[in-house]
Image (tube, rainbow, N blue to C red; front, side, top):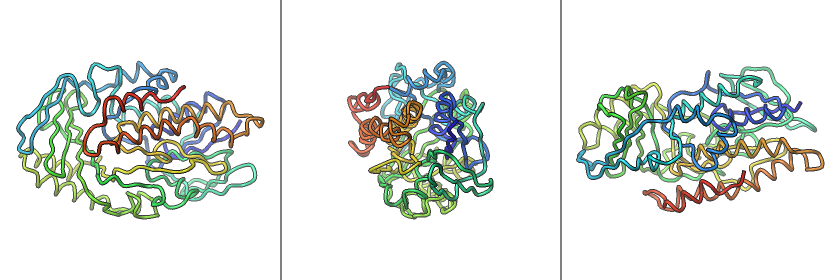
Length: 382
């Protein structure tokens, strides 16, 4: 039974663990957080990703977790409504589509619960070194004893530790898109009832949506800026969560929100100042010539992050996990073994990745065309 170390217990890592276990592999998942991560924005399962989730037997459960949104309002900088729709929401697209919008934490929990039987999890730990040997890879950890694996998969996000250890500094591959995104939760002090609110004020803008039966809000605040450094957008080759000061980014977000004209923005600023699930990072893409080296391969954002501006990060993670597991499952020595599987995985995924990354760059500052979205989300054969 082949052993596989997966770094990262998010969407890509947990989906891959599920697929590999079903194909007779023995996956071990290492995750820096102490438990499956909470917080985060709403994400979408659409196109080929719906097929993948269906094959995992999770489609109905995912539909049961979907957000319940009736429509949205678009406000000017002073808070006056300039547009409303009960047909489309910026976070998810058409409200009558088969796409599934759900909270990131709900999808991560669903995938983790589905994968955990037969999968070893190392929470609260991280890889510190990878040493390729003749027929294996030795992995050293911050806390757990060193272990040897047949293969290693980096599914550890935009600031991948595995990518840094094997392929070199993040700055070689990260391309800053000129925007930052902050996501955090708050009580529903706006009294929104299954209704989103979007507002743009100069270089700052936000979307607010109610979740958990309207008891809570999820706020997605974006602002334009050149690289702010701090090891989170390609400006620091340490590439580690530990290499930045999260409170510095929190202060930037609080100050920008407090300076906006709509009076309710002050409440959002207060929420950002105290939110335990506060997150802020640069919108960036990872572009690499190859996603594998030796017995190590990258998956999802670690190898080909399209950024949240594309709306397709979840799809890339789910589809990539399916394709990688499928190729590893059918790999024999006559097919080039793991090297052949990695090559076929890249050949199948590369066009899909290219089209989806283009969604974030074809129309900066505005949504991609419906034709481009439809083409990108289905541009792979499973």
